[in-house]
Figure (cartoon, rainbow, N blue to C red):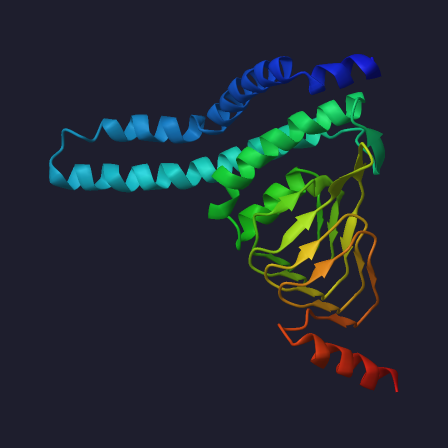
Length: 248
Protein backbone atom coordinates (compact mmCIF):
# COMPACT_ATOMS: atom_id res chain seq x y z
CA UNK A 1 0.00 0.00 0.00
CA UNK A 2 2.79 2.39 0.91
CA UNK A 3 4.69 1.94 -2.37
CA UNK A 4 1.46 2.24 -4.40
CA UNK A 5 0.50 5.53 -2.73
CA UNK A 6 4.02 6.84 -3.16
CA UNK A 7 4.02 6.05 -6.89
CA UNK A 8 0.51 7.45 -7.23
CA UNK A 9 1.46 10.76 -5.62
CA UNK A 10 4.65 11.12 -7.62
CA UNK A 11 2.91 10.45 -10.95
CA UNK A 12 1.95 13.91 -12.27
CA UNK A 13 -0.96 12.69 -14.40
CA UNK A 14 -2.72 10.65 -11.71
CA UNK A 15 -2.03 13.35 -9.13
CA UNK A 16 -3.56 16.12 -11.26
CA UNK A 17 -6.63 14.05 -12.16
CA UNK A 18 -7.18 13.18 -8.51
CA UNK A 19 -6.72 16.83 -7.53
CA UNK A 20 -9.47 17.85 -9.96
CA UNK A 21 -11.79 15.22 -8.50
CA UNK A 22 -11.22 16.48 -4.99
CA UNK A 23 -11.67 20.09 -6.10
CA UNK A 24 -15.14 19.10 -7.27
CA UNK A 25 -15.78 17.42 -3.91
CA UNK A 26 -14.60 20.56 -2.12
CA UNK A 27 -17.08 22.59 -4.20
CA UNK A 28 -19.93 20.36 -3.03
CA UNK A 29 -18.78 20.67 0.60
CA UNK A 30 -18.85 24.46 0.40
CA UNK A 31 -22.17 24.27 -1.44
CA UNK A 32 -23.68 22.55 1.60
CA UNK A 33 -22.45 25.43 3.72
CA UNK A 34 -24.11 27.82 1.29
CA UNK A 35 -27.60 26.24 1.58
CA UNK A 36 -28.86 28.66 4.30
CA UNK A 37 -27.67 31.63 2.23
CA UNK A 38 -29.29 30.33 -0.93
CA UNK A 39 -32.56 29.80 0.94
CA UNK A 40 -32.43 33.35 2.29
CA UNK A 41 -31.75 34.83 -1.16
CA UNK A 42 -34.58 32.78 -2.63
CA UNK A 43 -36.90 34.21 0.02
CA UNK A 44 -35.64 37.69 -0.84
CA UNK A 45 -36.49 37.28 -4.51
CA UNK A 46 -40.13 37.23 -3.49
CA UNK A 47 -39.75 40.91 -2.52
CA UNK A 48 -38.55 42.15 -5.89
CA UNK A 49 -41.99 43.14 -7.13
CA UNK A 50 -42.64 45.52 -4.26
CA UNK A 51 -40.93 48.67 -5.52
CA UNK A 52 -37.75 50.46 -4.50
CA UNK A 53 -38.08 49.78 -0.77
CA UNK A 54 -38.39 46.05 -1.33
CA UNK A 55 -35.38 46.09 -3.66
CA UNK A 56 -33.45 47.83 -0.88
CA UNK A 57 -34.46 45.10 1.57
CA UNK A 58 -33.47 42.45 -0.97
CA UNK A 59 -30.03 44.01 -1.27
CA UNK A 60 -29.66 43.94 2.51
CA UNK A 61 -30.75 40.29 2.51
CA UNK A 62 -28.04 39.49 -0.05
CA UNK A 63 -25.34 41.00 2.19
CA UNK A 64 -26.77 39.11 5.15
CA UNK A 65 -26.69 35.93 3.08
CA UNK A 66 -22.97 36.45 2.41
CA UNK A 67 -22.28 36.71 6.14
CA UNK A 68 -24.38 33.62 6.82
CA UNK A 69 -22.36 31.77 4.16
CA UNK A 70 -19.12 32.63 5.95
CA UNK A 71 -20.47 31.39 9.27
CA UNK A 72 -22.27 28.28 8.02
CA UNK A 73 -19.50 27.13 5.71
CA UNK A 74 -16.83 27.61 8.39
CA UNK A 75 -18.81 25.48 10.84
CA UNK A 76 -19.66 22.76 8.31
CA UNK A 77 -16.13 22.60 6.86
CA UNK A 78 -14.75 22.63 10.41
CA UNK A 79 -16.86 19.56 11.19
CA UNK A 80 -15.67 17.82 8.02
CA UNK A 81 -12.07 18.66 8.89
CA UNK A 82 -12.49 17.23 12.36
CA UNK A 83 -13.77 13.96 10.94
CA UNK A 84 -10.93 13.87 8.40
CA UNK A 85 -8.27 14.28 11.08
CA UNK A 86 -9.51 11.56 13.42
CA UNK A 87 -6.55 9.31 14.14
CA UNK A 88 -3.97 11.81 12.83
CA UNK A 89 -1.71 12.01 15.84
CA UNK A 90 1.54 13.94 16.26
CA UNK A 91 4.40 12.08 14.63
CA UNK A 92 6.42 11.60 11.44
CA UNK A 93 4.71 9.94 8.48
CA UNK A 94 6.41 8.94 5.21
CA UNK A 95 5.17 10.58 2.03
CA UNK A 96 3.80 7.26 0.77
CA UNK A 97 1.70 6.52 3.86
CA UNK A 98 -2.09 6.57 4.10
CA UNK A 99 -1.87 9.24 6.83
CA UNK A 100 0.03 11.49 4.44
CA UNK A 101 -2.58 10.97 1.71
CA UNK A 102 -5.40 11.75 4.17
CA UNK A 103 -3.56 14.83 5.38
CA UNK A 104 -2.98 16.00 1.80
CA UNK A 105 -6.72 15.92 1.08
CA UNK A 106 -7.49 17.59 4.40
CA UNK A 107 -4.89 20.30 3.79
CA UNK A 108 -6.38 21.06 0.38
CA UNK A 109 -9.82 21.59 1.87
CA UNK A 110 -8.42 23.70 4.69
CA UNK A 111 -6.52 25.89 2.22
CA UNK A 112 -9.81 26.71 0.49
CA UNK A 113 -11.29 27.71 3.84
CA UNK A 114 -8.25 29.84 4.74
CA UNK A 115 -8.54 31.86 1.52
CA UNK A 116 -12.30 31.96 0.96
CA UNK A 117 -13.87 32.27 4.42
CA UNK A 118 -11.54 32.81 7.37
CA UNK A 119 -10.32 36.29 6.28
CA UNK A 120 -13.89 37.53 6.84
CA UNK A 121 -14.52 36.05 10.28
CA UNK A 122 -11.14 36.51 11.97
CA UNK A 123 -11.05 38.82 14.94
CA UNK A 124 -14.46 37.79 16.27
CA UNK A 125 -16.05 34.87 18.07
CA UNK A 126 -16.94 32.98 14.89
CA UNK A 127 -13.36 32.02 14.13
CA UNK A 128 -13.00 30.67 17.67
CA UNK A 129 -16.14 28.62 17.23
CA UNK A 130 -14.77 27.26 13.95
CA UNK A 131 -11.44 26.37 15.60
CA UNK A 132 -13.22 24.50 18.38
CA UNK A 133 -15.36 22.59 15.87
CA UNK A 134 -12.20 21.70 13.92
CA UNK A 135 -10.63 20.25 17.07
CA UNK A 136 -8.60 23.09 18.59
CA UNK A 137 -8.66 23.76 22.32
CA UNK A 138 -9.43 27.45 22.89
CA UNK A 139 -9.62 29.07 26.31
CA UNK A 140 -11.90 31.85 27.53
CA UNK A 141 -11.55 35.53 26.54
CA UNK A 142 -9.05 34.72 23.80
CA UNK A 143 -8.69 36.97 20.76
CA UNK A 144 -7.70 35.44 17.40
CA UNK A 145 -6.95 37.92 14.61
CA UNK A 146 -5.45 35.69 11.95
CA UNK A 147 -6.65 33.31 9.26
CA UNK A 148 -3.34 31.48 8.95
CA UNK A 149 -3.85 28.61 11.36
CA UNK A 150 -2.95 25.24 9.88
CA UNK A 151 -3.82 21.87 11.43
CA UNK A 152 -5.98 23.53 14.11
CA UNK A 153 -6.80 20.15 15.69
CA UNK A 154 -3.21 20.19 17.03
CA UNK A 155 -3.52 23.67 18.53
CA UNK A 156 -4.07 24.46 22.21
CA UNK A 157 -4.63 28.07 23.30
CA UNK A 158 -5.13 29.04 26.94
CA UNK A 159 -7.28 31.73 28.53
CA UNK A 160 -6.92 35.46 27.77
CA UNK A 161 -4.48 34.89 24.89
CA UNK A 162 -4.06 37.43 22.08
CA UNK A 163 -3.13 36.21 18.59
CA UNK A 164 -2.07 39.26 16.60
CA UNK A 165 -2.94 40.13 13.03
CA UNK A 166 -1.60 37.75 10.36
CA UNK A 167 0.30 35.60 12.83
CA UNK A 168 1.18 32.28 11.17
CA UNK A 169 0.54 29.16 13.25
CA UNK A 170 1.61 26.00 11.46
CA UNK A 171 1.54 22.53 13.05
CA UNK A 172 3.25 20.63 10.22
CA UNK A 173 6.47 20.58 8.21
CA UNK A 174 8.21 18.29 5.74
CA UNK A 175 11.66 16.88 6.43
CA UNK A 176 13.61 13.96 4.93
CA UNK A 177 10.62 12.64 3.01
CA UNK A 178 8.30 12.70 6.01
CA UNK A 179 5.29 14.74 7.04
CA UNK A 180 5.85 15.85 10.63
CA UNK A 181 2.85 16.78 12.76
CA UNK A 182 3.19 18.25 16.23
CA UNK A 183 1.19 20.33 18.68
CA UNK A 184 1.52 24.04 19.33
CA UNK A 185 0.59 25.08 22.87
CA UNK A 186 0.11 28.70 23.98
CA UNK A 187 -0.28 29.31 27.71
CA UNK A 188 -2.72 31.56 29.56
CA UNK A 189 -2.29 35.31 29.21
CA UNK A 190 0.29 35.16 26.42
CA UNK A 191 0.49 37.49 23.42
CA UNK A 192 1.53 36.43 19.93
CA UNK A 193 2.54 39.46 17.89
CA UNK A 194 1.31 40.20 14.42
CA UNK A 195 3.03 38.35 11.55
CA UNK A 196 4.96 36.15 13.94
CA UNK A 197 5.56 32.55 12.85
CA UNK A 198 5.00 29.57 15.17
CA UNK A 199 6.18 26.15 14.00
CA UNK A 200 5.37 22.57 15.14
CA UNK A 201 6.32 21.63 18.67
CA UNK A 202 6.31 25.21 19.95
CA UNK A 203 5.42 25.48 23.64
CA UNK A 204 4.75 28.95 25.03
CA UNK A 205 4.31 29.40 28.75
CA UNK A 206 1.93 31.62 30.67
CA UNK A 207 2.02 35.42 30.37
CA UNK A 208 4.71 35.33 27.70
CA UNK A 209 5.13 37.62 24.69
CA UNK A 210 6.24 36.78 21.17
CA UNK A 211 6.99 40.03 19.37
CA UNK A 212 5.91 41.16 15.93
CA UNK A 213 7.56 39.29 13.03
CA UNK A 214 9.27 36.85 15.39
CA UNK A 215 10.05 33.40 14.01
CA UNK A 216 10.09 30.46 16.42
CA UNK A 217 11.83 27.33 15.15
CA UNK A 218 10.32 23.89 15.64
CA UNK A 219 10.18 22.58 19.21
CA UNK A 220 10.95 25.99 20.69
CA UNK A 221 10.01 26.28 24.37
CA UNK A 222 9.24 29.69 25.84
CA UNK A 223 9.11 29.87 29.62
CA UNK A 224 6.50 31.63 31.73
CA UNK A 225 6.75 35.41 31.53
CA UNK A 226 9.45 35.42 28.85
CA UNK A 227 9.58 38.01 26.05
CA UNK A 228 10.91 37.06 22.62
CA UNK A 229 11.57 39.82 20.10
CA UNK A 230 13.08 39.97 16.64
CA UNK A 231 15.73 42.73 16.54
CA UNK A 232 15.20 45.50 13.96
CA UNK A 233 17.43 45.79 10.92
CA UNK A 234 20.91 46.66 12.21
CA UNK A 235 24.46 46.80 10.98
CA UNK A 236 26.20 43.47 11.59
CA UNK A 237 28.96 45.15 13.59
CA UNK A 238 26.36 46.67 15.91
CA UNK A 239 24.81 43.25 16.49
CA UNK A 240 28.21 41.70 17.30
CA UNK A 241 28.98 44.56 19.69
CA UNK A 242 25.65 44.10 21.50
CA UNK A 243 26.27 40.36 21.81
CA UNK A 244 29.77 40.91 23.19
CA UNK A 245 28.49 43.49 25.68
CA UNK A 246 25.84 41.02 26.88
CA UNK A 247 28.49 38.34 27.41
CA UNK A 248 30.50 40.56 29.74
